[in-house]
Amino acid sequence: MPLSKHTDTAFQKCIHPDCGREFDCSQVLFKCPACGELLDTQYNWDRIEVPDKLSRFAKRWADRDKPLDFSGVWRFRELLNFCEDKYKVTIGEGQTILQRNDSVAKYVDMSTSGGGCLYLQYEGLNPSGSFKDNGMAAAFSHAEMVGAKSCACASTGNTSASVALYAHSRGVKCTVFVGSGRIAFGKLSQGIEYGAQTIQILGDFDDCMRQVQDVCTRLGLYLLNSLNPFRLEGQKTIMYRILEGLGWEVPDWIIVPGGNLGNSSAFGKAFCELKAIGLIERIPRMAIINATGADTLTDLVNNKKLLWNDGHVEQAVIDDYYAALTARNFSPHTCASAIEISRPVNLKKCLRAVDICDGVVRAVTDEEICDAKAIIGKYGLGCEPASAATIAGLKHLRAEGIVGADERVACVLTGHPLKDPNLTVNYHKEKRSQFSNPPVEAPNDLDEIIKLIK
Ligand code: F0G
Image (cartoon, rainbow, N blue to C red; front, side, top):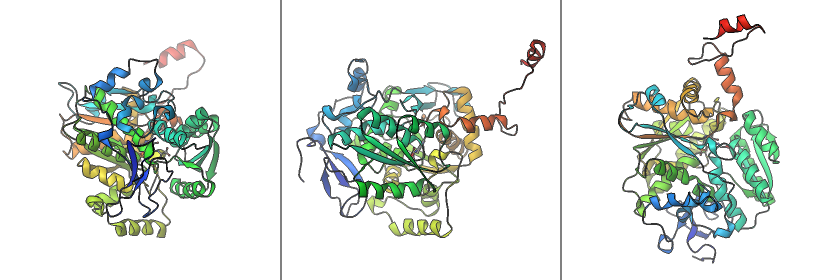
């Protein structure tokens, strides 16, 4: 394998065991050129000075003057060591909070005694308001390393907002593809405001994802979707920060919404690596939660029994499934627009993560998502609809007895509540909503106003 001077600590590797070809990190690929499978970023751990204990990483945070130490991504840099410091990009991502939340715990029937069981990892605090910034810090560093001048992504909204923000901070030209009418207003407004050229395709996310890959190939644009293996390296740090928030103890469960399945893939890889290099002793279980209107993963895993199978995933099962979707002209639909995806590009990596983390997969209805979101908003820091799928899913898993009342669970709240204010206001205005809190009209009269105060 050729190793360049930039990247002797890391390389790209095809995930298919029968191929497994390796490529230098200086190559811009996004799929294995030999077999078309997904690529991983892999490390030569023996050439990396990894701290002997995870707690060593926390100390860096105190050094606010050093941007790479302050970054919630790069302060873990030895664990994603694919480029030199001079290429590393940060705009202050990853300053997130792991909040213990007993009120939400009660909603899902979890114990609140002892140390408390339910924790919410709030990624809405990122600069663009979602977890995507973790990945973009890493992917834009790779883009910097390879000298990319223009980039693109397909998006249900958050990726485009994040890409647009990082692109203008680096002076990189940026085009984003979104499904027309398929993206929450807050997210659309961000991409436009941050200066991205926004192309609204008459189609859904899966159509955009197909188009953007061809556009990037034809025009030589740098692709920032989670097919980009360097992006997923940044998203691993969400797990490191959960461990940090728990005093470096491994929780029993990680719960994450499933859309294009980048997060779940990255989280599984993070834990696998931490165990392999001896920084943790056990791997938590993971639950991935789809919306019922976009439940490809749930259907394939729970009904079609699709497995990672040491990398020998039954491609025919996936091909048949997608052919059936096409035959009935299926387009996914859920109010959680962020995860309205029916052909998740990281499906196989996600199956690997399910294998690594003894994972389970569930789908929840839009109503369950909206109710859970109202509870997270009322008792926690709030979140966007897709993020609330975690709590709705956990409620199922508690009812089924798969998650125990005393187990320690960390749910990843992937995005900020202001991403989709329309949905929030409509939910609360609707009297039939279980937790509605409608605004009250009042005449401009003191006595009448006072009568209304409860
Ligand atoms: N939650 C939010 C808020 C998201 O924006 C996304 C994905 C997900 C969860 C799903 O994460 O793809 O890693 O499984 N949003 C992408 C986008 C697709 O374009 O913004 P995943």
